[in-house]
Image (tube, rainbow, N blue to C red; front, side, top):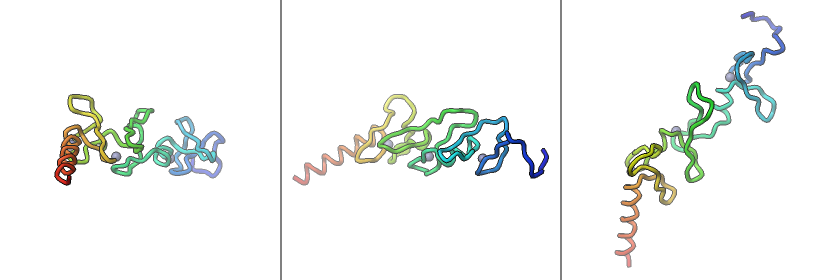
Length: 125
Ligand SMILES: [Zn+2]
Ligand SMILES: [Zn+2]
Ligand SMILES: [Zn+2]
């Protein structure tokens, strides 16, 4: 590729990484700045509330897969029980999220906390 100052008018470059976007998919943000898809997602993608990394589509995929719970976003693999680390995003017996007081918990950890809580309340009385 020629490295001269003159460039083809159709040869857009990404404002972040300067890669040439001629013939490859790109995205324009609200201020008309051209981004390659990857940088666009890195900049504007929702952040995972567990690892704080942007949630982006898997390589080769167009759609982002993310979990939204309690008004927070999660990577599929970050959506795990805070207590025991059980992956909550997969379907199956006993899976799924049972949030309690803003905590992401699996069914059994949630049930145990509720039990502890009600035990405390009954002894306090
Ligand atoms: Zn870029
Ligand atoms: Zn994450
Ligand atoms: Zn758990």
